[in-house]
Structure formats: C-alpha cells, structure tokens
Image (cartoon, rainbow, N blue to C red; front, side):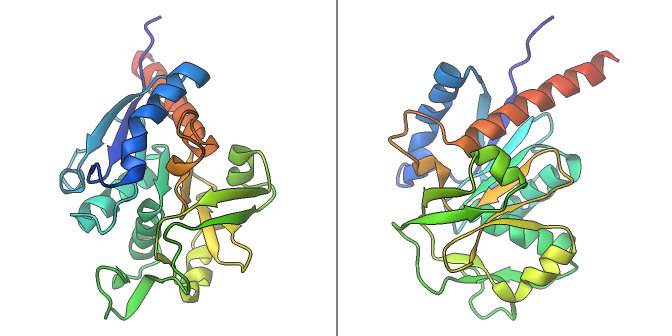
Length: 243
C-alpha cells in the first residue's frame, strides 16, 4: 500500500516578524522526528484562501496567528471550508477569533458580526478588546472534563502563552453555545480560551498560541493532535478513493 503524506494548509500571512510563524518549520520537523507524524505543509496567504477550491485536497487546516489578516474574507472562508467539509481544523490566537466570527455569521445568523480590531465601531463585535491585554502573557487554563480539549491536552489544567488583545465578547457566549459551539477552556477569571465543535471529526481553537510552547523543539499537544487527525483524514480519503 502506498503511504500518502497528509497535506496541511497553513493559512496565514507569513511573516518573519511573527514569532509563531518562525517556529513552524521547527515544529514540523519535531513532529516528524519525535512523533513520526510527517506532514506536507503549504502556506496559504489569506487572500488566496478566499478563492473557490483553495483548500481542495487538504487533510487539515491550521489558521495561524497574525491579525489583522490581509484578508478577513479568506480567513473566514478557511474556517467555513474546514467546518462544513469535516476537515480537521486548528485555530490559534487570531485563528480562534475568526473561528468564532465564522460560526457567528454562518451558523448563528449574525450576519453583522464583526471583529473589533477591524471594525472598532461595529454594533455586533463578537470579537472585542480584552479587559486586559494578553500580549506577552502566560496564564493557566482550566479545561472542561470530558471535552476534546481534555483528550488532546491530557489534563484539566495547563499553562499557556498568549500574544493577543482581542477575544470572545461574552455577550454572545450563550447564543454561540446554543447553536453548538462548545467552550471547553477558560482562564482563572472564567474568560473563554478554548473552543471546539463536538460533532466535527477534529475542530479545536485556542486564544493562546501553542506554537510558543516550550523551546520549540517539541510540538505542543494541540499541534500533535491536528497532525494525527490529518493522518486519519488522509487514510479515510484514500480508502474512499479505492472503494
């Protein structure tokens, strides 16, 4: 049997000035060396992600930090494609924010939902300035028992690094939850830090940046989990093709 290397779309506007972007090559190497998870990764600029078929053939989508994106439309389109097609998805920092934005608009019916960084005067700021900026911050996250996040992290408490100033507007939490989005991680004050979709093969997003975990020589549990989900998706697609 021919082994198919999973193809992963790294959606984001790659920049050497973004520390998490600079770590990606080393993390991919670490996945291969330490976890035997080899990925064929492609950077997809957000402008390109907006095009029809841009993510065809990929086994996972990783929406990376780096907001404001050059194309909000492309970032939201990447989330929607992964959500609707059952493609494994990981959103980190801005990826978390735009996962919320996509769900609010396309599932909750909040057509006017906006990101406060892009539209500070918008009426429906689903993503709004945090009460306290998390740029350069490290903090504890409590994880909901029985959640995907707990299975991925292997614990109900973790210490994570941030580099953001925007997050979920709690005024929309109940509506998002009622439509199926699960919030499975919170900081010590109860503010949401992790979300997931229970009915999706693998859909996880964190406001913190797992790319910044440790010294960069080992991949964070969330990144390993995305890689494993990509492998499973590639295998499933191959079986369907042969059938």
